Length: 357
Image (cartoon, rainbow, N blue to C red; front, side):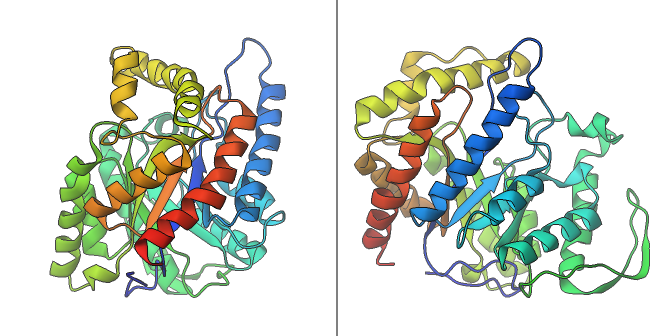
């Protein structure tokens, strides 16, 4: 199993298995506060259970819309830090382009202290664009903002005092940034959805890579890992030491049939809503069956099915981390809890046995 990146920004001694969520709620007319508060309580239960059953990582993503109400993941993670003991706590993702890297670093350094050294950050450009006009950023600078702010946050992890100059964020002249994290370095991952240029950038920087696979055939993403490691090698990094993570949607249930039935309605609701916004067609039952099949992007099924899917993907990616997004909009909370339990008690041990971890 590949270990730490030479930069010290990612340490993965074995196959890590965990979860991520956007804290989805079902939008309701009128006052949504009660539903959001209930969802936050459920989210705490999910993270606590993930910790108890031995999962490695729990990620919370950032959005700025009513159906994904977690706009401040670090606050949720800080609450979880006081209720968990060992699970690593990460953003998934932080939309760095519309954030201030100094504040992000300070917030996660604080989380690192509160959690006893369990904080991570997964940064990305974001799959939704609400945060850009909300915080006054120009979408014409979509990639330039991310590149510049990524440079800054990586430098913040390397030195207590920093001098830095940029175009889209005010420069810093020999200032200290506090608090410092408990870890020598907070692991900072770059999340990508399949853009080769983003993958190559992560490799050149020597930063761990998280690939979100939400559609298509997973093996079609395998060349991205090769591109990532080639770019890292050309930049002088130990490419084999850089961790890769795969993020997928799915559900573990006691049987294949119950998993398929439970996940279909909520998944169709979410994908049809996004489809209406982006001009996609509605999800059909046939498409769903293909997606949850042995070579599809969804990880839905019994513990045996999910174990087989993770191992199938590992043949193509050789990845060190797998994160499952289960608690999507409309999925019964009890089903999410059962999925977490099975992922921790049956799937994770089976995957590790098969990999010799």
